Length: 132
Image 1 (tube, rainbow, N blue to C red):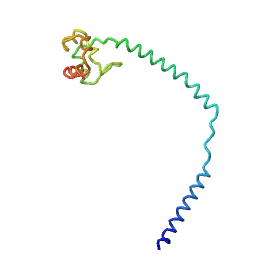
Image 2: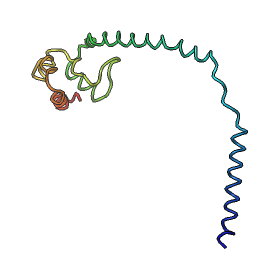
Image 3: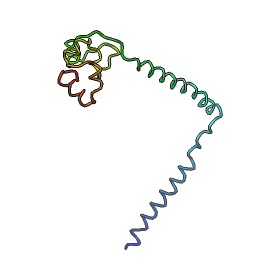
Image 4: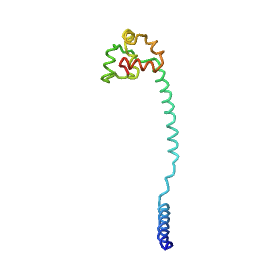
């Protein structure tokens, strides 16, 4: 009885294999890679190099620091609450856009002293002053 039950299963597996083989043979071969495509890849490399040099230039420009924005502490807090910032502002460093006297009143230290603090202390102060 077991051999009779295995016979249809074996036939099914045999048919599956032959169908898979036919499908494999009927499938068209992948198109050959043309030389023109390879040349196109080579031509694309120089622009990538230009982008890298452009990134270096952008990084050098960024190292000069942000453009000065004369905002009061209250204006910055309001901007933060409304989440409405001027174009180009780094929202993670809102304190740099505050006028120096206002900064010193709010933070009770100069911008240089603040920037020398560890990041966690800066974050805590900014949270306390509603700039984070």
